[in-house]
Length: 119
View 1 (cartoon, rainbow, N blue to C red):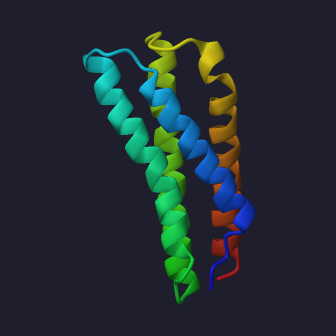
View 2 (view 1 turned 30 degrees about the vertical axis):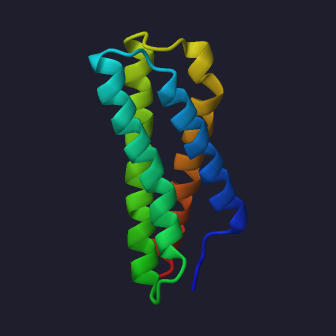
């Protein structure tokens, strides 16, 4: 009963890979290490939850997985703001990746709303 399209899965996977690469560019200090681990976990969880949602049996299960993915995507944006505000990486370095995560949050928000509306 997988609802997520292959395009969405591929887009999330690409964003996760780019986020991992960005995390590896963080400075080798306490802030870089802690924030790097957090952003890798939250971004990876987005894709993992969408992937786990593919074989679900019910719409409720799928909606719950999408909700988890949305929360993790929003957390990823939170950590990106911490990176930017604390100048751990330049805004230029984060620009297109931050834009992509904002777009994914918008897609997941719309998906969640549509699923809840169809109950």
